[in-house]
Length: 555
Image (cartoon, rainbow, N blue to C red; front, side, top):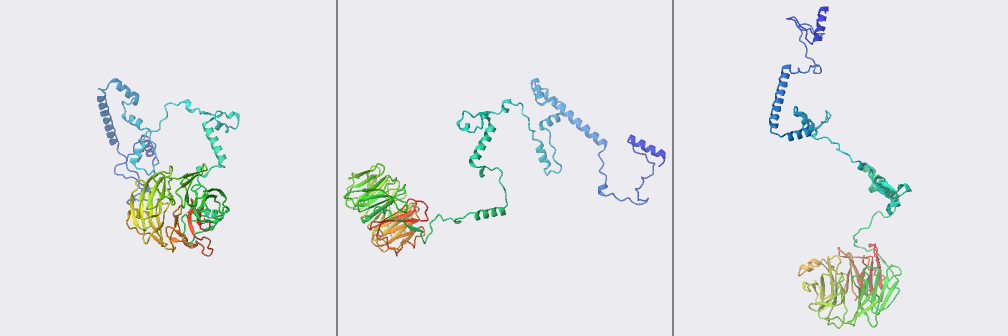
């Protein structure tokens, strides 16, 4: 390039003007492109960006913005002409001097926007919404008293005084007291308990399964727990020492009953004595014996709260009440309004409110348990064979000598229902379960019909759930256990005539009684302990046999 042209090019670059070309000349071709060849298009990475708008367009936009700003200013001044000076002064104090720029006011109200990353997935609308949130403001003023830690007096509190390590700790801050309490708790618990751990270790399912297997192999004992419900088939039980072994007798045992609250069993018989024994399953030591002169006991029973013992005789109308707390024997010679020559069979309600006496000629007499006064009487057809209260003490079930069952309401003393016990010529016994589900009726032919209590209340001819036909003589005793899983049935007319029925399957346990031993003889009375741990029965030989039921852990 000639020197003159080179100087002209440098001068043009300094002034910003483009070099002038001669008319009719074209620009030089790139290296490798000869004259007459068409120039190849540059690759996309080497293409030049599009040209910016011209200076004329930019000048027009600036002029339009300036015009719009002047219109806004004019309109604002027009509106502020009517405002009082006080209002304008207040706006200036609050918003500042923004008369010449409304955009500045908007920027102040919105606050500074934080620019996010360019590759953020938020849309423009979300970014704009985020930018509209005002920034966190600093507090206007700070109270110095808040920064001072409140001190807690340790000397005047007897519980905190023990936590002092030295005399200089007469006062502690709340934070230090919190740490001290935490230390005391961890020292008492032997470390941080599991429920107080803030960071829990996370392991995979495989690790957890391996840890469970390790824990399982590191301990001994029964890995399979016993079922809560009683299985049928075979009842695991053990023959214990007779309950009255420390006071033997040859007279018939008429009553055996466990105390409702203590580990005590009562044994009464025709030898005129009521004896109390401590139940331990080994020696069963005697606690006390009450002798009633010329009073062979027909039935003896605890009150619902266990504080009294009631006893009746085979040939007397006197009702004896023994107060166990005071140690007094109280005879009730006559009940006003009760015209019975002999008082024998009776029942006590489970809530301890009523006493039901079975009279002659089909009468049932309801007495108040506390005062022993007559409340009212109920009459059935025929004679009363047996009676019992429902589990809620609101109804009375009575079995008649005609094979019929009557259901009475205790409060109104009205008959709610009456039905015939299926296949029964005359009834001998009746019992209700503690859970309010079953009613068992024993007849003279040895059949025990188990009914649903709801059907006994609603149907005139209810069908039994199951008829137990394992006895061939009259069923004189029926007893449900407290969990309503066992029904004990017995007949006093035949030796070894006792069975235990599993509920709800209504099947008889095959391992009781043991026929080869034949030590049960004629059974006259039966009872279960409050939690079904023991089962006792009294026979005519004067023995109160007792068995331990292993399925139930408690007394």
